[in-house]
Length: 200
Length: 215
Image 1 (cartoon, rainbow over the protein chains, first blue to last red):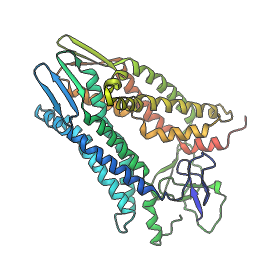
Image 2 (image 1 turned 180 degrees about the horizontal axis):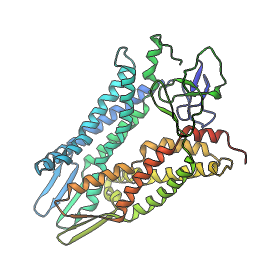
Image 3 (image 1 turned 135 degrees about the horizontal axis):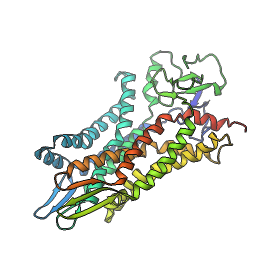
Image 4 (image 1 turned 60 degrees about the vertical axis):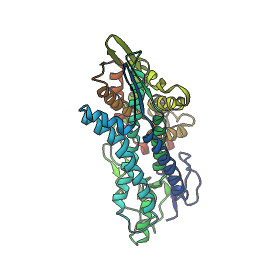
C-alpha cells in the first residue's frame, strides 16, 4: 500500500523513504540482502562450531592427572559421576540448541524462497524462539570463565580454558547475527500473493 | 487497533502503526493503561502502556547501575579445598581468558555481562529522565534509545547468573564453594532486568520523544 515501515519504532513512511524521521533508523521495505547476510553468518557460525567440538574446552590439572575435555567429553564424564542433570543441561545448551538453531535458521531462509513450506504462524513462532534462545548458548562460555578463574588452587587443582571456548563463543555470536539478519517480514510476504487480503 | 487498514482509505501516516515483525499495518489506537495492543497477524505486542512506567523504569535503571558496579568488583564465589582458598569477582572471571589470543574472549565476556547492561542502564536514564520530568528530550535521545534497543539481545547478565549455578554444581564435589555478596547482587540484577523489560513500552517512549509535552 505504498508504505515503508521502521522496524525499530513502528512508524510508517511513504515508500522510498530512506531513514526513519522519528528515530533515524535505516529503512528498507524488504531487506534484499537479508538472505545473503543470513547465509554468510550462518556458514561462519557453522565453521566455528566444528573446532569448538573438536578442541578441548577445559584443561584440568590436578595433582595426579592432566585432563583435557571437549564439550561432549565433559558432559559424558559428568554423567559417569552421576550428575545427569548437569550433563543434560550442558548437552542441551551446547549441542542440541546450537544444532537446532543451525537447522531452524537454514529452514527459515530456504522456506521464504520456496512456496509451500510450513504455515506462516509456525515459522514466525520458530523465528521468535530462535531469536530468544540463541543467547542462552553463551552459558557454556560463562561456565568456563567462572571455572577457570575460580579453580586456581596452586598445585591442588587448576582449570584453564581450552581453544574450543573461543570458537564456541564465535559460533554463538555469528549464529545470533545470522538470526538477526533474517528479515522476519519475508515470512509473511507469500501469503499476500496467495490472495489473502493483507496489506503490504 | 482492532482492524487492519483498508488499502483504499488514505489515512495520515501518523495514524498508522506497522508491526515490526511481520509488516502488517494497523490503524493506531492507543490502548488504555494496562491494556495491550497486539499484532493480529503475528501476535507481537505493539503497545503496552503501564501506569507510572517511566518512574519505575528510572528507579530500576538506577538500581541496575549500582548493582552492576557492585557485582563486578565484589567476589561472587569463594572456593575452599583442603586449605586452599580462592574468591573471584566477575571482573576476575572475565580476565580468566586474558592469556594470548584469549584476550578477545575476555573482552567479549566482560562486555556481555558488565558493559552492555551498564551502557543500557545509562542510556535508559539519559532518555527517560527528561521525558518523565516533562522536559524537552535530551540531545540525541532518539539515537540513544535506538542504540539501547539494538543492544538488548547482547545483554547477558541473566545468562551469566545461570552459568554460576552450573559451575557451582560442576565443582561441588571437588571443593567447598560458597556464595559471595556479588552472587546475591547478580540474583537481584536478573530480577530487575526482567522487570525493566516488562515495564518498558517502546512505542510510548518513541511517541513521547516525538511529541514532547510542553512544560
